[in-house]
Image (tube, rainbow, N blue to C red; front, side, top):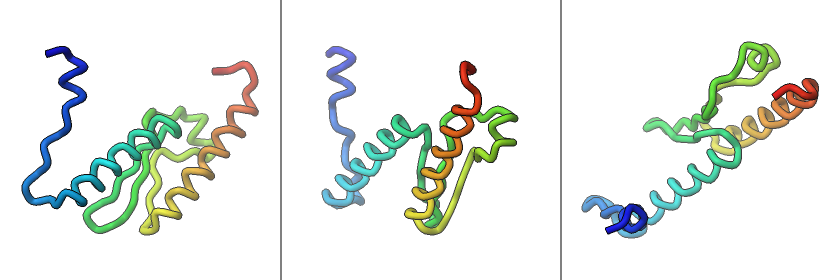
Length: 102
């Protein structure tokens, strides 16, 4: 069996999850991976229901001084999304103020 064939096999469904719950979990995992790849943020919810987002890379001291945050949290997922968008705008302004530096 090739390496690709192993990766393509579905994860076995845990016995304590209904088919719909399992499919919902798989969708959430896929969305989390897409969000991470598109935005540079990993998002998860705690057992208490709070939603967290943390960057997939460390920030520099200059980025932190410019108001970029490593991790954000809120009880409302919409607020976390709004904060991620705000952070992305801050990052774009920070990058625009530093022409030629990457």
